[in-house]
Amino acid sequence: MEDIIIIAILAVIIGLAGFYVYKAKKNGKKCIGCPYGSQCCSKSENGSCCGCSSCHSDN
Image (cartoon, rainbow, N blue to C red; front, side, top):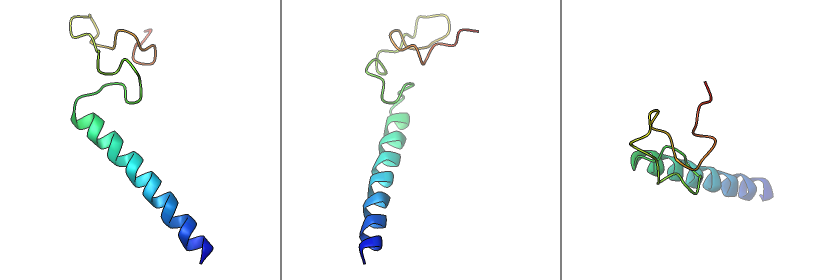
């Protein structure tokens, strides 16, 4: 019985995380979880976020 409760709690957590990612991507966020994710520079040459180093490609 305890295993079923633990599995149900994990399933709810994973489901909510997946829904958050889906909702963020649907709204156009490029950097999910980044505090600067909604401030992406549309005028920059590569279209990446202004303040998030994980969005920039150093190539």
